[in-house]
Image (cartoon, rainbow, N blue to C red; front, top):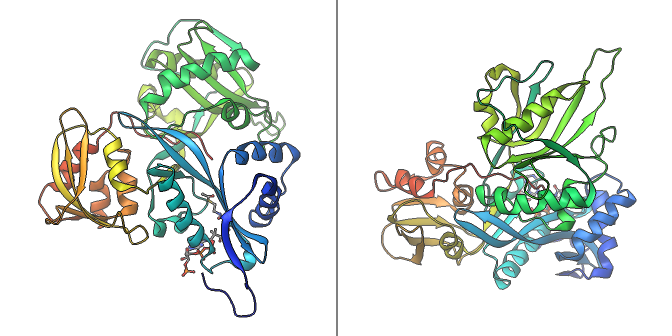
Length: 418
Ligand SMILES: CC(=O)SCCNC(=O)CCNC(=O)[C@H](O)C(C)(C)COP(=O)(O)OP(=O)(O)OC[C@H]1O[C@@H](n2cnc3c(N)ncnc32)[C@H](O)[C@@H]1OP(=O)(O)O
């Protein structure tokens, strides 16, 4: 870490003690140009209390911070314990001196020591994290559905009854359903504890739009055995301006397509609203295909939600399941983590398991660590990266074979921003 000669006499990177968390908020408000409400501060304290917190201190004052949350993430074939990088910030007076670089070096090492082979993150700016070996691994679409008339779908909705629940009863219905039915289906989804449900998904006020109602929760079928649920807020319209009210979707999940159809039909039928705004849906959202009239839905944004950093490359590759047999060598460029850098022989078996060991032999495919991270959950094909000149194919057909083995049934999804 370099510093101007006249300052930075004593710079250390160390863990931030629990009684120092307030200093993180002071820094965060400077870095993100905001003011934390008491409620936000209380939520952030709960979040950060259980996080691994790294700070850079100059002459005893906090000038940089990075935190890692302990998480369980769905990966193809199972789940992995991983870390979620968050609350990254460096004082504007201390930018571009390598403070973030030092903190991330420390964080990757700490993750390895804690037996975490993957770190996930949501980036504030795309340009920052690629150089640190991180790549976008999921894609989302934001959509707007016009609902000024009933939704015409190509399948019949599940006829079971819908009921609106709140409080503990709602959480008792949808929490276990999410864990049992929803989470195993898509890579990138995180296990939610009580804090995550209450503080993140179901919090009373949406700070980005305080006019919206608190979350409403509607469950399909009996509360003790739901077949799906939707969580949404509503906002009133403006009669004079001729603007209809709107539904703002937080999450919609069902066991079967007919259940999804029932929940979408319900949302579209709510009186005094004329559209549904979805800030984030998987790119393969079945609604796109289910709609009889696709003009009713507009994709308003596309973004890459969850990013990954493979900190222990062989452990990460061996942890996921692979969809076909494969035997090839990959050369990975990972200058920040030399233990990953170099050539690896990847052998996958018909049962989905894999072995990944060092090799001196020639590589069939060569790529950067960030691009392997992008392909890891099966959401971004190496072929796509190869067509952009980012993956080098040294043996004909090797990229396609690797993509076949990486393939997953449903697109991975980053549903939980952190
Ligand atoms: C997971 C999350 O929490 S995402 C939130 C990230 N936080 C923010 O965006 C808050 C505002 N920004 C900041 O606090 C800081 O500018 C940070 C954290 C982004 C960077 O911290 P710094 O200590 O300045 O980074 P550091 O000096 O280690 O930079 C290393 C390299 O990263 C790159 N980099 C750093 N910041 C940026 C940026 N904003 N955009 C593009 N590249 C960047 C630069 O190439 C830099 O090398 P260079 O100076 O030789 O060009």
